[in-house]
Length: 217
Image 1 (cartoon, rainbow, N blue to C red):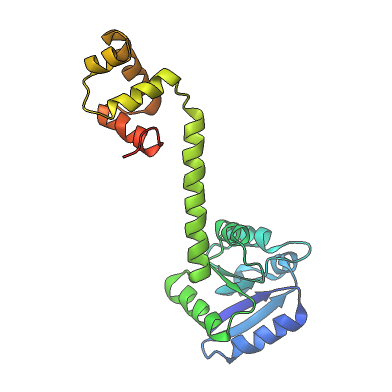
Image 2 (image 1 turned 90 degrees about the vertical axis):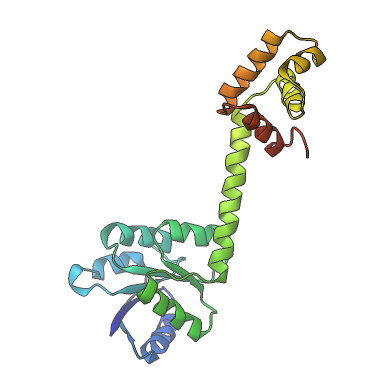
């Protein structure tokens, strides 16, 4: 039998969930707790469950804090977050704090069974809600990183004009003539941008200009 613990401050919900899980042939509820603080006082190396179903919104010690505590003290125990919260921030925060899966409290019993089976067999449970939120979070982080990079790199108006002109078949000398500058000054723009943008070729400068909408293709 695979040992399960329930941590939720709603007694009626917890008892009903215990009945459902005990009806699954391979699983057995070994103990329950009202919140994370009570769980930490009960848990010991001698009575570790394989999986802990953990609510997020609880008094005294919430699900985020409890998940982090479990990850630090008992990393072998798999945490399955079980919550009414269906927002990206809650899901990502629980995963960052060590949870291996996340399902909603209004899920069907068979989804709960699939989640438990997946935690046992694969060590993680990924459903549609988790995948979409993870992808959205990653895209958002990439956008923030790109925005931060743009903010950190200060490019002058003349350097921007130079970047636009190198995205053509003009030689550096022809660019110098078009900008009414000396070839040495143009070489200076090029070398400065090499250093600012961490590239070493004209192609690198062109790619930067395209990616940052300085020119369009």
